[in-house]
Each structure stands twice: as C-alpha cells, then as structure tokens.
Image 1 (cartoon, rainbow, N blue to C red):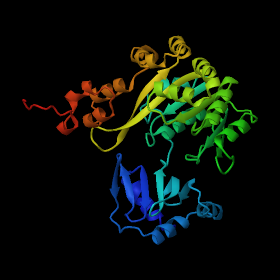
Image 2: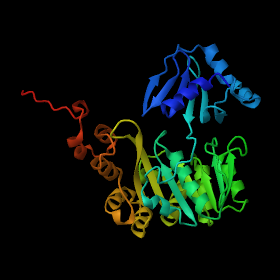
Image 3: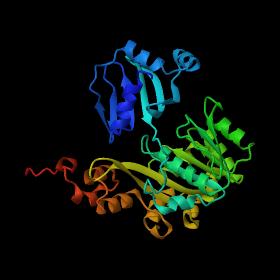
Image 4: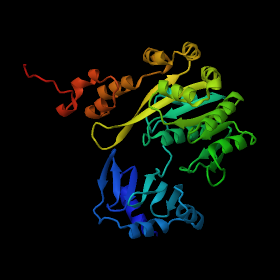
Length: 364
C-alpha cells in the first residue's frame, strides 16, 4: 500500500470531498465545503515529493519533472478511486485528490427533478450540466450516463480528463476514453468519436472554442451530446458559448443553441439543514419555442423571467429551488442566503445576523 493511502483512507472515512497536500502544511480535508487540517506535522518538500512520486508511473513522473501539471486518476486497493491534480507552486509541489464515490449515484439518489431524466429521452442535441468547480457536475453527468446505460441500447463514447467512474456496459455499449492517455485533447477525441458510430457522446468539459464547435457539430449531425461548463446559470451558459465563438460565427452559434440545445442543469451544493451533508440545488433550463426566439433575437437576458414562469415545463430559477428546499427544511438557511441571487427574500430565514446587511442607525 502506498504511504499516501493512509491520508486518503482517513479522508474518505471522514466523508470529505477532497484531500489537499502542500509543502509547509499538514494534509487538509475539505468537509462540507470548508478546509480542515489533519492532525499531522507540516509536510516538507522532500516528504511530499516522496509521497506523490510513489504513485506516479514513469511517464507521469517524466512529464511532471519536465514542468507539466498532471491530471490523472489514482486507485488504491484499500482506499478506492480518486481524481488527482498535481502541480508546482511557490514553495514546492501541491496536489488535490478528489474523492470518487465507490458506487455510481442515480438521479434519484441525488434527488434531482424528474425533468433531468426526461432530457435523456432525446435522440439528438446538446445537454449541459454547469456550475462552479466542486459543485458535483461530474456526479450528475455520471448519473445521467448511468440511466442511459441501464435503459437504452446505445453506443456511448465518453471523453474524460481523467476518467473518474468506471461504467460497465449494460444495455448500452460504453466506451470510455481519457484525454492524454487515449486521445490528445477533447476536440481530437470528438473528431475521432464521430467516426466510431456513436449515439451519445459525453464530453467531460467544453473548455475551449474548438471543443465547443466540435460538440455543436456532433449535436447537429444527429448525436446526443452531454457536457459541462463552468458557468453558474442558464443565461450565463448561453452567453459563454456565444462569446467563445469568433465574431463571424456568433450568429451561427445562436441559431445552433436555439435549434439544438435541449436543456441546461446549473447546480450548487448547499449545506443540509442538519449540517452533516450537502445537497445539489439546481436551476433548470428547458428549451422551448419562446426561449429559442429569445436566443435568436439576442435577448438572452430575458431568459430568467421565462424560467421563473415555466414551472409547468420543469423549469426553475436557482432562487426558486433554494427557497423551496428551504421551506421543506432540507437546507441550511444561512447557506441558502449565501448562495441566493436575490437575497432579500431569504433574509427572514437567516440565523446568523452577521450575514445580513448592516444598517447604520447613527443619527447625524
């Protein structure tokens, strides 16, 4: 067993989402969004390098010593599977280990709205899961892929950096490919996938214009494409895609979104009411003729008002979802206030007065 496994095992047993290693500090666990140190001495550069290099293969070590950052998956027999980011910084090396759940969580386990499963009835188009780093996008995407794998006879190709959950083919054939190991980039993987008779293509991250354009091409040519973006709302997601395109292609991108974007799930992780876990709270965008018209006419800024009134189609704004979860006593009121966009309607629930705007009562 690698020596670093002891820290990873402790982190998993504590229920953390990430374990961080850096020179000059003890290992740190991210628990319910906050960092807490393990009771251990501060790591020296030599000790941390020894711990990390023990789990690298020769190719990874050569690349890292040549100055490259590394993103890879690591699996220990006694500690399970982790996604690893290894990098250099002032003071020495650093590493972040993301805990990958031992079993695939279903959409029901995640308590996501039924409309998320209905998105997957489509045979063609683009479905996006968005949110900031660490908000559970990969977990949601994995649950969506798992539902397809269990219920439909499809050829599913995934492009991941790195591969997190391992999917065993069930009704579907699932082909998982890792960027840097099996393909050079997401864009190159998408090009190759289009020659491999796919029904569904999962793209771990639409991180650059070339990948976005290739994903659009795949969705336009009769494939169902699932992907993620680091955006925090449906409207910002549309803006990000359009802004990523060259000026000459922005109109074409708007037309694509109007015609082929099926839905957007934008999510945040909010502390539960009992403080022992976090719950995914989601904004839901469902493309409709009315929304398609707003996109093509350049009125993306009006989309939030349509989401607010589109509950009959499964749509909801983040604030609506937060308020309903709060009223059901599922989430912490202070955390709901922090995550809300329009905070005024949440003020009456807040228990920590320091979070509220300070009113100056001094009389001049």
